[in-house]
Length: 345
Ligand SMILES: NC(=O)c1ccc[n+]([C@@H]2O[C@H](COP(=O)([O-])OP(=O)(O)OC[C@H]3O[C@@H](n4cnc5c(N)ncnc54)[C@H](OP(=O)(O)O)[C@@H]3O)[C@@H](O)[C@H]2O)c1
Image 1 (cartoon, rainbow, N blue to C red):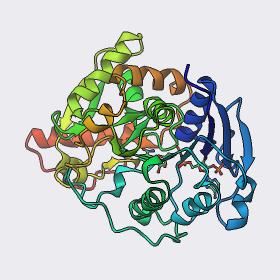
Image 2: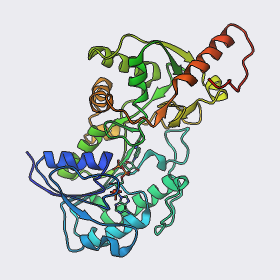
Image 3: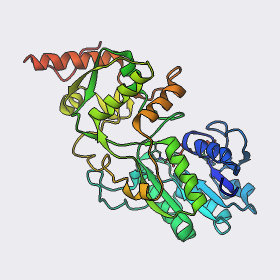
Image 4: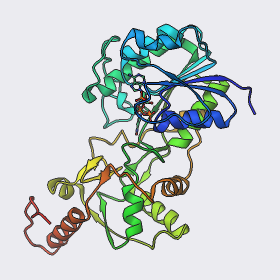
């Protein structure tokens, strides 16, 4: 085991940051979690410090503390600046979890980042998410220099996901029958398992890794992805071989199937060509710096065991919508005229 560190997780009450705190406890570190306590409970075995980063006063409970490693998942520059003012000079290592949403052009893999928002910006508007993350990254790099580690995750999947985009697929495949598959089997998809990302972040803190990396696994085709989910479920006796019907993206978009996330969406699917870059980032530099993405089957099994009994799906087609779109697609294949507006099922 590595030496015990004093680790501060800013967040730690939900999903990724909670997983980081839980793994840090399991590694034997002395773990403090600082948040409002509104999103959920911190994991067992941590010290909880109640803070509210909404104003300068709210982070005072952290003043005078010092940590070997700090991990922050914030999205608002002013909130990042406040904790840097209180802790930045004493921290040994600082991870800021950013996002691949920092890139200006998602159709390419070599895009510049977006123009940052103002370093004092407090506006959480989702339209500013990428620009806010750029401003947060800049603040952390300026303050921590060679102690700053900045992973930019793509789609994070796993147990505890509060915007679950994976879950629809294992559940739908387990249900069986004709399964609507989006676009082309060769269209790439890309993700990172929350457990792998948390583990890498702790490895980086322990080893003093610095730099900025796209934190993502190897891209694979949507066909291999869906087959891989089926293989994993068949392997644990949760599914039989499904029957996929591939429907072109234009037909799906014309008939109200949403890509990526949200109601009546198909998770992981991003239309071509606008998102050609977002699903094709090179994991090489991150893997070279220690990221070890699990095989798809492992991620699916983890999700299944943690969520299948009581899923909280945030993405996916209703069975009615899927049936209506498949019916319309088969009519189109038979040469019938199909209206864009499908009748209510
Ligand atoms: N999900 C994805 O696919 C994806 C993809 C790319 C990047 N990311 C990034 O990955 C990270 C995910 O982080 P996460 O899973 O831990 O979820 P999160 O929802 O970003 O968690 C935010 C944490 O900050 C705390 N917090 C929020 N407002 C606060 C305030 N005013 N004062 C103090 N604490 C506050 C929350 O706890 P309380 O509410 O209890 O205070 C919570 O623990 C984020 O940085 C996200 O931008 C996610």
